[in-house]
Amino acid sequence: MENNLIWLCKLLLAHFTSDFFLQKSSWIEDRNRYKVKSRFLYVHILITGITALLLIGPKYWKTVLVVTATHYLIDLGKSYLPQNFRTFLLDQMAHIAVILACWLSVAGLVPSWEAIADFYNNDSFWIVAACVVFLTYPAGFIIARATKPWSDQVVASEGRAGTGLISAGKYIGITERLIICLLVCLGQYEAIGLLITGKSILRYNSSNEEIKTEYLLVGTLISIFIAFAVGLLLKWLLGVRM
Image (cartoon, rainbow, N blue to C red; front, side, top):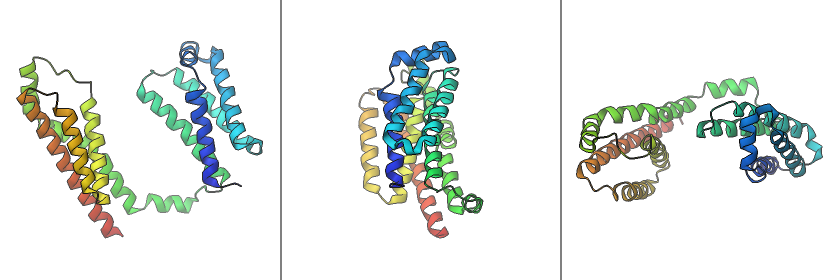
């Protein structure tokens, strides 16, 4: 078999090409409307199979068959769900999971039960998993409760819940904490400074109300402190385990 990584890249390229470049928005709308009766659903699935076949070759026709059949089932199932970003993300994750499973199978890289058990019992994995999960919603909840008196003041001063995008601040905070934690583990403290500076310019430049600016600053500093603390703790724990 040719280079395993190149084969995987070809299969991923086939997916991205057929799903994003060779599929029209009108086809997606037709699929969401007519579900299993949509003729464009079958056109898209045919293009998906042909694209995969052209890129990885007829030698792997079984893989093409699996990718095509699962693509049909995943897209059909998606048409019955609410059409939002979460559904789109789950859809793409499912497609890529199938591709990765095919790659592991063809390349003979399917892990044994012993390897799976070793991974499950790996201390480092669970340490990283606990830190990552904590930095998402639990840390966000702590910050929200810690800054609630100031958020109430902001709402009272504006007379409404704010004019920003719904939940945007929450996801910005989660992404920010994860990036800072990763940079701390890598020892890239200069990059953290650039990240914080860039966010400060973007977020506070348009805020001309002192009370709102101070509230955002407090929340940001608490978020950064938590990310730094978790990053340092994670770095120390992984160092101890090694």
